[in-house]
Picture 1 (cartoon, rainbow, N blue to C red):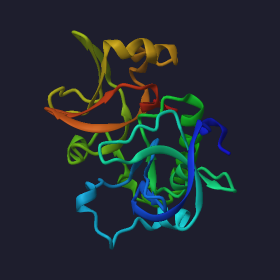
Picture 2 (tube, helix red, strand yellow):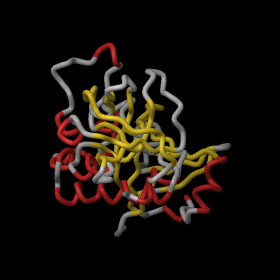
Picture 3 (cartoon, rainbow, N blue to C red):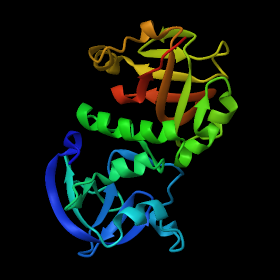
Picture 4 (spheres, rainbow, N blue to C red):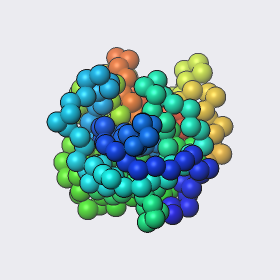
Length: 241
């Protein structure tokens, strides 16, 4: 079992059907959403899902398999789906890690547990290095020098890479600026309350000037494209300047 994501047991069951790229239904009627990952394309609400599109990658892993659900919180989401880290039984294979290693998902920004995040990031890196799935497309990681490409993904979970040109503070917000035009170019925003958490993990915003980083999160438009960093796992330091 992927020890980093082996949280408290939340039940077992046999998979009846895959609903979409990160959710499925058990034979007892429970609907489960895979925690810790984001789909590689925007999800549709349950009412808009097409029976013809059953997420073949997830179906190939889960169809008619017994699974164990684990997690820190089993509170259903607004669609009634139980979030969980899902393990195949008896193989104890982490389904999220399998999808990530195939390039069929992205690590979410919501994983607070460091060991679990490490397991998921390693699986994603395996797919990225092998150019599997989404990573076979050079445009899978957006370049901060092309803010228009990032802006086209408003509301989507996106991975962006680039060099931090400057770090500025305005009121309670710290800005990591990736361009000279602050109203048009890409920037990362960090609220004052998040700074102690980042610094405790060794990420001091001011030290990021002239460093290349990879950042993940949902794209917003505030003049130029923005991603708000609220958790440590959203920022990865990259080699080179």
